[in-house]
Length: 379
Image (cartoon, rainbow, N blue to C red; front, side):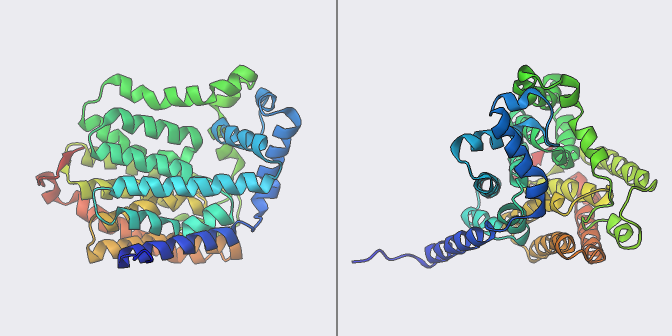
């Protein structure tokens, strides 16, 4: 007699099949970035050796991701397989992190499975061959640790995330708020930069100059100079201005600093519930790429998964609308990237502006000052 699956198990099985089919088909796509960046980096690693390749600077990523490419060269001679396997693993890691964030809810498995079917996750991972799922997953784990009051794991996850990608700084206002509220020991403040140093240490030992390792992110900022295709305020500029550096960028940097300072000053004395803490993390992860210039379309993936998690943790109609809005807005950035329709993210900009207003209204209203429930946690 055959095994009978429950309705919920049949849905999960169907989603699993969909994930396998979609990821398998998309993994055959060779995006332009692979030929321009990743394939040449892998060729360098093969030519110099998996260890000696790090004797000098190559690529414009930090060593942790390059270490993974080097390991891949030891397992297969197919560069496409290395890139696509890493991107698929990063997506799986992000899904696990979503499950971890939502895990006390009965729908945690569904949330993890749904994250793998988000259009932004599919395009970023199996289609474009990117590994943003790694730093995003680490940020989600950091948020989960913050909610549970585990300060050391929070800063460790955050530090590893930053060692992989500078975009992990999008969650920094939230982390700083938590550290200030908890009056964290100074040791916790230095954990993230210490982890970065540990992460690049193997490359330095082989011969990669320390000054170069310390300034990789500064050079990344100089390397990418166009306005960007993220659905933020700069989408308006991207549609009407030449896609080249502009003196107006300083306005975005100042706006990001002002937001971060206001965010921390407004929240670090407040008591927030689990739902509100995720809202606070989402506000941080969405507002910075919204305000800053030179943001790429994939930089809102963290906001996408936080919004999805919020919808599962607190399944109110408005949270479902927020998740749909954030993910839909992010999708306009990817469509603009593929089709070179640079006005399209303006729609996403308007949508994200509403989401930011909605989150700010919830978090900064006076009632939040005294909000407390059985699940409330002090930031």
